[in-house]
Image (tube, rainbow over all chains, first blue to last red):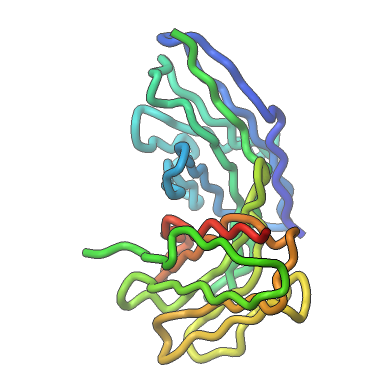
Length: 115
Length: 112
């Protein structure tokens, strides 16, 4: 069965410095992987997704993630953090095939951006 | 077009009462999911509807929880005899033919 591990429950960076949010997954076959963001009192928003095309995936707001099969990782990065990036980030793997798909969620990483 | 909507946005109820939470998915989306998010936690899968197939109820935590989806569109999640541990944000998502799920804003349930 698939599982997702977000290695840091909380990350704090200074504005303008790089962001790295780590995610490892386990999957019995080629997975689909996602990053979602949840701002305070807002709904969940898809940042980016990997579905077996290019291993480097670019998302919204300057975020990107690289799928590394050998490391079973899908870390989220951004070159320069902005105050508005402060939010909860979830790494997600899609389980199942065809119409029988469920998402398996990591526990989330809270990103704080300091001025 | 309109996204996924949920109502009410907030619900406060007394322990032992029944509550109904509503989800309107994106028009034309065949799959609908309910999740629960407790304070500081990730999302907990509850139930999944796909077209006319029997729903996947494997995530429902107890028989006090049930859901239905009428006409392949609107869904209602019902919690009977609410308990304080049911307090959480209940999220609905819909999907069409891709893996991407689109989420509603959620219903914050508080059981006193």
